[in-house]
Length: 554
Image 1 (cartoon, one colour):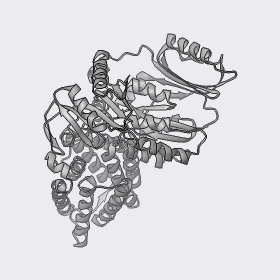
Image 2 (tube, helix red, strand yellow):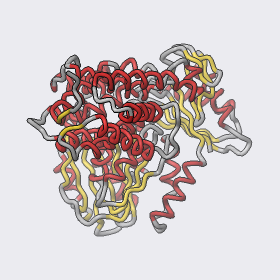
Image 3 (cartoon, one colour):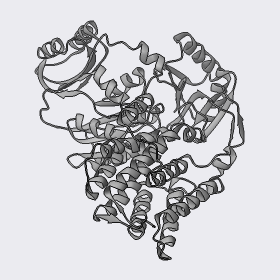
Image 4 (tube, helix red, strand yellow):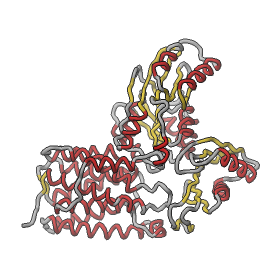
């Protein structure tokens, strides 16, 4: 007998099966990324997005429809990572808005829900592109409308036709996006969406992959990482507590006193940052005894904002994809007018950001896109009325926007920086006496004036923009795509910079990564200096993973 309605229990079961199907295919989906960089992560991002909700749904006992929908919607929203993850979360959010008001759903309700899902997903993207997950979702919604209008009620027939249509649209995505066609792949986000749909149907049939919380947690732990496994094994917690504090000074803080503070902090910890803003001193460091640091700080003035983070527990939570930081607000004090949050990977980059006045760093970037939940936690940690967020990666901007939209008690401004150099220029452009709106405009303008590049390696053979790339080639990637590639890292760097520099260029700034020795970095600086004798060259340790060098030209 044909089934024509679904209850809350069945929908929960189907959603969990969809999550597991996506997880089982995440590596295949990662391989579909057009750029052959070592961080192809669409499948991982989408899996972590949906698993954040699956964990909630799995824990429900005899849920009603509204509870299931709330768990799916809130879980995917907060767990969303990367552009594909954010779009997937908006698809589920749109469906939940329609479905939650019904005890059971039929094809007609699902039709209306999918229309709402597509509407919300398109709205989440400032400039929607066809040939992406959006196109696949729209094609599925149109097919569902067609099935409903002809009066079909059997879900077996329904799912078979929907999956056939979805795969047909997915296969057509290379015709809509030439870059996909040149690379010989379909859209990775669309492939992820189809994995979810196929899993949902398998769950309906009772054939889906069984969802178990322990396995899900271990899988997430494998994927959520900022460092390589070798780096994690070697990581020690000599200084267990990351401590940040702000001091309201009771007397002048001259250079000698600042030097005295820095000297003391370096004796009791590492990764020390100290910045002075008028009568406020901001301090950050890793230490084994936060109490000693606080006692020292009290010699200079009043503590107005202290936070202590257990690094070991925070890293464990990140490895589980929880997005939670074990951070204690010791003294919130009055909120300051403006605060800053930046996504950062690498201790050197982090120190630069802190030195420029960034209050809170979110560890992530190319190697792991932080979730909306990570953004929300960072916003909460900054005791300010207005918080500027710098995503520093084009694949993180949507998650930042989503966190902005979910925040009600503070004004959030997302500066859509796509690179580390853009963030540095934007922070330098900040004017304390200007309004938030004036700063938003000037910071966006400053970021747009910077030419950024990065140097990494290819993980597979491919062709992009007519450039043939071979596995293990070095690649110089600019704001608009591949600028150079080859087997010699210095020649690839020079080739990239040749295309980034102009007659009016004055400065090349270089940040070398965790896999580059100081000697190799200096050799690279000398090579660049000899090739561009008229330009100033600045070389700084960034310690970022994956990318050997990040550069900017101004």
